Amino acid sequence: MMRCMYLAGLLMIGQLQAEPLSQQQLEAEATKRMQSFAGELQSTLMNAIQAGGLEAGVEVCSAQAPEIAKKYSKDGWQLSRTSLKTRNPSNRADAMEKDALMGFVDKMAQGHQLTSLSFTSYNVETQQFVLIKPIGTQAVCLSCHGNAIDPKLHDKIKLLYPEDTATGFSLGDLRGAFVVRYQGVAEQ
Ligand code: HEC
Image 1 (tube, protein in one colour):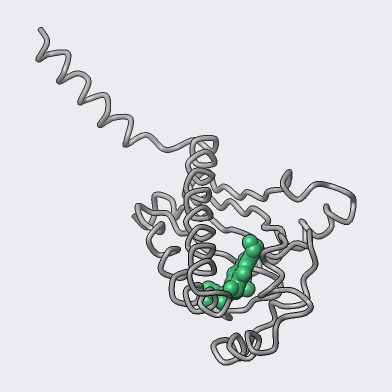
Image 2 (tube, protein in one colour):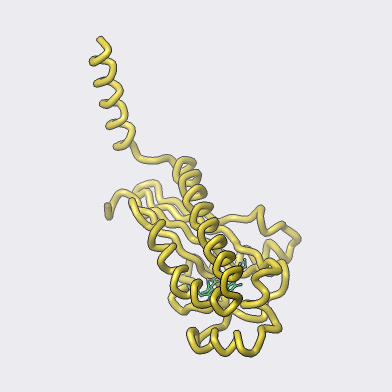
């Protein structure tokens, strides 16, 4: 009897996995993945700055940020960051991301709180899903993305990122966004 129930349980799990995920399930999973990604990025950056100062922060950020994104991009999910003003050109916004970012700028101009904003896109047939959440500019970000970057640090940034446009931000500005994509059933 016990064995029978165990088997029934296994079969049910099998079935559940084959079921398409609902938009709510995708949104919940995307949010969870985004929070882990954001948490690891932030702690890696803060640890590097504490251990070796801002210049070490730049080095660690440039080496680790793409690696951390890669680490969380599996099982059909893809995580990245983008902005209307990027430091790394490979983070440049595509058409959908640009629309989302410009939507956030409009909403913020209308007085909406950045933390209340998000953009989602879901294709019922292919199950392709995208969640885009704005990233604000905090005080700690200004040393590398603000108006008065230390000249030595700025030289280092320009050396690593000759196409850098991610400066001149002020506290509370929209710095960019996290992008979480689920590639859906078609390509898996
Ligand atoms: C020590 C310097 C430093 C600090 C402090 C810093 N960043 Fe960055 N930031 C970088 C570097 C370097 C990159 C490029 C990383 C890469 O190659 O993907 C970057 C890239 C980004 C990107 C990806 C889009 C782009 O411009 O390429 C976002 C978004 C971002 N930073 C937001 C922030 C936020 C928000 C904070 C504050 C919480 C912050 N950064 C603090 C150095 C820094």
